[in-house]
Length: 194
Image (cartoon, rainbow, N blue to C red; front, side, top):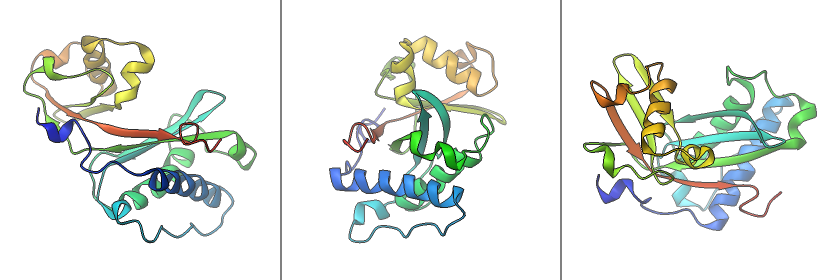
């Protein structure tokens, strides 16, 4: 794996992270309340970079929604705004967020590095790398923080990513493409917002 996958080419500043968190919250709140989506930030060129991003919502410490773009097809601020709404209203695992829930939601954002094809699974660092496994029409992705949260080792992380892709555990040993990426992960709690 190249060093490009091991670190972001420009970590976001505190002000940029806070702006993305503010934007995620205000975008979902506006959507739930039927209001116009808030405008994007100005004067923050890093937020115009095309980067993959995921927005994770929790309530009471439990997952409430998580959706994202794997590849950077649009400015990161636009990706975060859209994915906050998608995570809150269109994650198929959950019912749409209601107005009554808005205050209890907590936001976490993961801004991704580009995907790198894995040639040797021993290079995967649990807690540092996220994984995407692809086989035919099947694909599954797990963010870097997932393996750490569950205390998984490398093989369990690979198995769980296969399961997320709709494949059997152990499928990573043959016939799949494995990609890794890193992420700058931040939340309202880590930024002192809630």
